Image 1 (tube, helix red, strand yellow):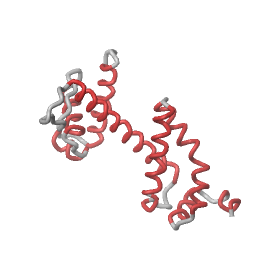
Image 2: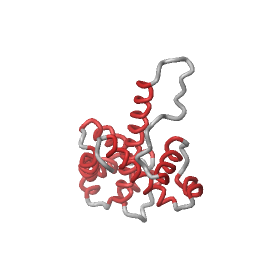
Image 3: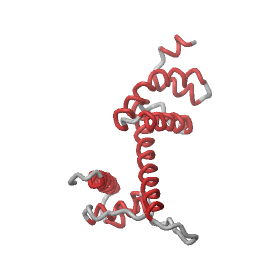
Image 4: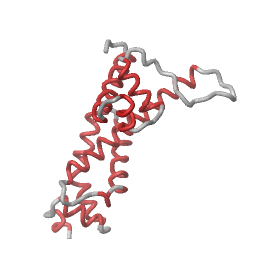
Length: 176
C-alpha cells in the first residue's frame, strides 16, 4: 500500500485523507514537512518558534482537510495554511509583547484595564496608523477597514504590513 501511495498525486492523497486514510496523511506529511519546516525556519530563524508554527500548520491542515478541493493543486493550499499560521504567530507575539509592555509600565490596581494596549504609533503615517489601530485594537476585518478608509482590502493588508515593518524598524532603533 505504501508504494501505491507514493505513486499517487498530492491531490489523490488528499482525497484519501479526507475519507479517513491516515496512511495518505503520512505520505503527504513525508513529502511536505521538510519544505514547510524550511519555509518557516527561513522566516523565523528561531528553533522554538519554528517548531511551534510547524505544529500549528499541521493542526490547521488537519482541521481544514475537508475544505480542500481536489480539482485544485495541493502545494499552494498547504503553503497558504503555512503563511496563515506564520501570520497568526506574528499577531499573537505582537499582542503578547504589547500586553507585556503595558503590564510592566502600569501600576497594578484592581481597575487596571487592558482593553486598548498602549503602543507608540507616532512613527507611522496617519493611514498606516489608522489601519493598524482598526485591525489590532478594534479587531475589524480587512473588508470593514477598507470601507472605513475608502480603499481596497488588499491595500489595507499592505498598509498594515508596511506599518508593522516600520514599527519593527523603529523599535530596533533603525530609521523606517
